[in-house]
Length: 448
Image (cartoon, rainbow, N blue to C red; front, side):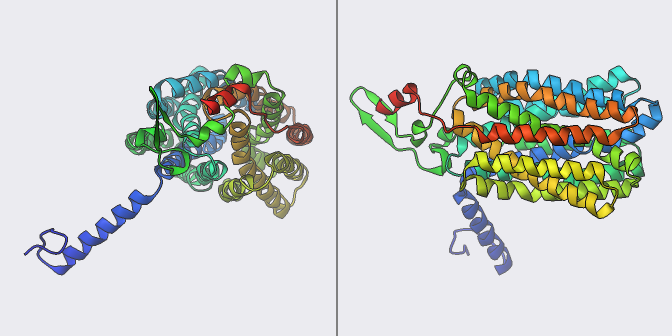
């Protein structure tokens, strides 16, 4: 006989399982779809960040010893990748607006996997640089560019929180995935690790992209999950969209503003601390501070553990307090952390410095991304964000190359100290950002 739900079953256990499944599906359907997209962004950032952004540090010393390359040569790949990502930024933003985040993320995962395969096959500097470029392009197109575009489109009131959750993935990648990369390299080889990473990206990443919806309107929703009522006017049908009250500058209009340059240059200075440590933290701890591979991995785990949790805090704070003051404060924390790392020989102080660095990095990330959307609007965010990358690439190129060059000259700590003091400039730049004024174009949109 059929049960009360109209589903046939042979015993009570099967009926309970069916009812439980139906309950779970019903509750999942109640969750705003934008949060599922945030989850996809988290997974994308965990993989690309863990396998490459943080994980590459563990390739550094084995490759240097095997091929006899200098630190400057290895750092040069990161510098070239920063240049590529800067020039690719506007193009990536255009691709998202033209073809959608789903298409861009799919292409990104494929390029990332090809880059990992080439990295595992590397035999000379040229091949190493090509693989690094493909990995950098794949990381941008497979995680950051489409994910941030989706979040700024799907969220308004909870934008900073959503970005914070997405950036949680970057910390999680460094905290969980990067140590696994180190373990596999020690157990097998760096070549095998690269091939395994390529397979994981394809097997996990490509199915996820099929779940992406590019806009809330495609599901008859507004940002934050509100229903999209239709109002009929004579000879005209319009949607009552609250997001129309937001400022929405074109890329050209945004670039002409003072805020664009204050935010972009300040962000570039902040990213010097990230790009410098991304390449040189583990080698510096090993060769400059006498850490073992395990000890260096523990230091990285402390920093990334803090950076994993901190974006959630940054998202909450960013939705409650003035973002520019929070951003300025994180720059002071960056400066203190890098100075302690450069000058101290005590293990506890070094670990404390990495904890502070992780907290400052994690809190700052969602705040700056949300600030960019607040200042210029979500409509053209992908392209505006791309032009920001064009500005921030210069400091990101300088940092690892400077540290690597000074390390080859026998003064590893000096490069870190220079970057630390530059954070004062970022503090001042963020402090002088002004609130945006809604332009006449936005006013006309509201009137119509």
